[in-house]
Structure formats: structure tokens, C-alpha cells
Image (cartoon, rainbow, N blue to C red; front, side, top):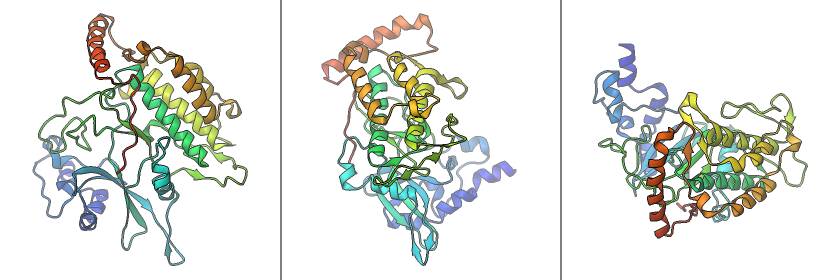
Length: 373
């Protein structure tokens, strides 16, 4: 009975959001039926809830999904601290950095891959604001189809972190958990924010979608809760390294240059989520990216002083890409666990698909300018 009660009633963290329904609607955003006034469950019990749209509860206490009423654009609403100091409301470092990279100057720069703040909503009577951002997918869902598709992701994450460093900002939590993909063109029909395999209205499964090669996505760094801005006129002070994405950097017990730790975290992300995979979490590594191994090995060296700067990473990566032939870039990204018996059949299917992409004049490494919203 206790489990059923939790499902048919809102959790405490959900009640906080439901109480802001009218405020959000005034700003042009509408949450799912579960969080609207007068909601009553359309199901009975836990098992039924799993198969009903309004049975999909919040997965993250500080992030809510909603639809922009004017154009049905799906957005993420994030609670951020905004404490009152000396009678004035201040903003958190996270909001400050998100807003910084969302201004007109930075938004027009194609090297900027920091998530955009569409709007910041002040909450009356609460020491918090709500930052409105695009709702996006995890970067490796669906799996990369070609080497070129995987390289687009790596390239944009390199560019994004490099851009932050050029603007004297350290991310400090640069794991795949803080990277997202704007895949709206890949999925023109959208997807459900809690169950991405289903449509937003829950009436059908999300089946056919376009590949990254045909409809390129854009990738973004998110979550600047641990990030720091540094004064360019002063030496950058060392900072304590934090555990990121379940991985602890070698310098975790000592102060270190935060930019060097960022490089380690980004290199570790590539090692875990492209080279090796994480079978425990049903993530399988991919073959064909071995040419990146020397660069990644340097990025994850134990000694922070021996790691390349992001300037060097960008330079070496660009040189590697220039040396790759077109057929390598268009070759299939094969899962490490793929059965040998299936490879010839999948290779033939991939060849036909590749010819189609070439006829459509789609580049081997997808590219799309960040969307202006």
C-alpha cells in the first residue's frame, strides 16, 4: 500500500514544482498533466503506473521538463540558488556562468558549446531562481553510427571546454553526465522526457529517427554548479579536484590547476564512453577510434603538469582529423561486443546507407551551428 500511495500521489520534490504551475504558465511554460492543478492518477498500482504517461515521476529533484506554450518546444527548468544578501537577491555561480555564455556575444561564437539559458524566472518568496534551458538527450543515445559521428561529439566537447578556458572558466565536473545533445532535428516528432523511447504524448513508441549524418545535432556542456570564473589579470589559483562521473582524478587529495583537471576528466570521458564502454551500465565501447588513443593517454596522465592544455588538445585533434581518409570517417562504428557472424551483413547495409548519404552530400563529420532560440 505504501508503494501505491507514493505513485498515485506526488513526491515531496514534485509538490514543489506543482506549486509553481501558475507561475510557470504565466511565463509561457506548461508542465505535464501530472503536475497540473486537480491531477488524479489514471492508473491503480505501481505496475499500471509504469505504462501510463502520468505515472512517470520526476527523476531529478532540481530539473523539471515543460513545454513552451507558444511553439510546443520542450524545455528544462532548473532550480538554482539565489540567496538574499543584505536585502538584495544575488545569483549563484551556476546562473552567472550559464547567463554569461548565453549572451549575444558568446551565442554567436560557433566554438561556444555551453548550454543556453532561454530565460531566468524569479520565484517570489524563495531564495531560488528557475533557469529555463532547451531539453536535450544524452549524447550517446542513439549510438554513434559512424566514426565521423563520434568525432563530431568529441570535437564539439573539445571546442566547448577550450572556449570555457579561453574565457577563464573551469568546468570542474566534465563527465558525460554533464553533456547533452540537441537532437530535435533527428527526432522531429520529439520524445518523452522521462522515457525517451516513447513519444511525448505517450501514444506510440519513438521508432524511426534520422541519423546524425543526415540531420546533425549539436552537443553542449551543462551544469556549472562546480565551475569557477578566474580573474585573467591574476595567476589562476589551484583548486581542489572533485570526483566527476564516478571517476576520481589522481590529484583528488591535493590542490591542482583546475584546467588540468578538466583535461583529465574530458579524456577519461572519451576512454570510458567511446573506447571501453561501461558494461555494468549497459554501455558498450566502440571500435575504430584507436587513432585518438595517444592524445587521450596524454590527457589522462597522472601528473597534471604533463597533460596538454586545451590549446594543444585542439591542435593535435585537428591534425589527426586532417590525416584521416574519407572512407575512415564514413566507416561504421562497431560495438566491441558485436558478433563476427553479423558483421558482413551490417557492413553491406552500412555501405548502401553511406552511398545514400554521399548522394545527399552529407559531410562525413556532421556539423550544425548552435541553434539560436
